[in-house]
Image (cartoon, rainbow, N blue to C red; front, top):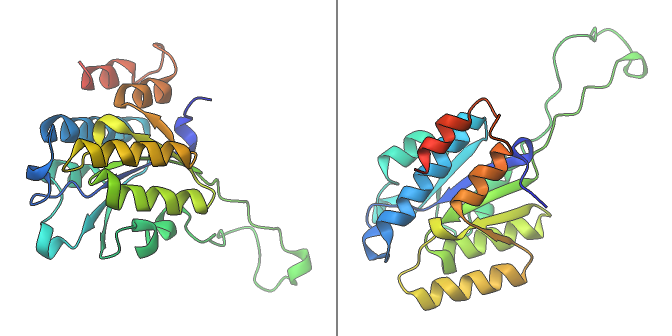
Length: 201
């Protein structure tokens, strides 16, 4: 099973200015998050960020925040509990055009279904708290969750690795940044191949 770029959304969890200094390998973790966000922009994948209690922990890295379409401010550890689900699965809108308001309902054409993206590529900090709880709640909502391990951090390796074990056991796919990028591309003939490849060199 490979990632499908047309079914993917990217969620980047809590890369915040007062949280990141406590993460081992923080430079690599943030660099990989930026690679994912830039690839998502090049390939038309919706990208969202989250910030946990930003008054205390600060905002996300500015470059990362700029690459996200929206950033969710949350107090719950799970972003799914604080409004992320509404962004990932917005309510269906009635499409304009085609139906005169005066027509009886049984003569009106049904609105075309809105394509729903059901895969979330997820990365962030801390892996064993906000990322884990967000992932598990998304799985409960029957969303396919792919966790990008080299773009995740915790203050200790033991906590991070325990989170990965638990996520795998819950049915999440564990992947790396390069796996995601090349599966989104699928071919060296993709029109954006050179631009996306340049992100990981």
